[in-house]
Image (cartoon, rainbow, N blue to C red; front, side, top):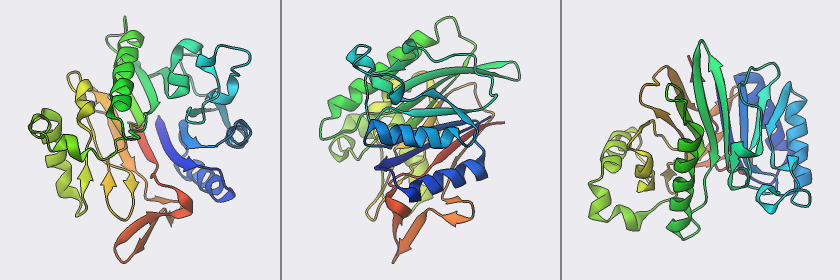
Length: 278
């Protein structure tokens, strides 16, 4: 069972469609989740139909629901996720309104594999946009949604996968209460030795730390820093998984190196990530 999550940034181009097609062919994900990308309902429908033509079916897309027909809560949101399942995949949940929050920024699905059940939350977090309250509220909403959806499912493994929009929080990281926090010490100390670039973390994720261990690596590259944005959180007892950041797809590099400064091809600003359950 393999998830592929990719925030493809704004706009939709033929080049991006080609990269997605190559990723499908080379990675063969069972669950494909696309964040951002289309700026309009028509473009979103285009990318969803395109992926469906490759042997997938739509689990959730913001194009499925119109605010003219249903309350605005379920209306179009260009930041809503596009979640597509490989045809024939046995998912235990059919999509319903109760399986999404924040206009499709949080979407729940549950599946069974080898006798074990997995409660899965695919997400696209709120951007900081200069106000840490937005991100904190998103994490609170996510935490509440997880508790609601896992009531009576205490033996389920929990997976939270996606773009947490963890942008640099220099001002918070400088505060003593964060520098000495469990989250900061565990994550920063471990991952800072893996790159010669600067890495930033958003301590608001400590809100979820009580019950969830974190596998944490960044996927956002530019010529100044690597920032932790896209990664999985998994429940403590769940260990049989492999998490990867894809820097190459179909033998081609997604990254360009100019004098030691990294950028991504074709106006991407995230690398795709995969989570494979062994």
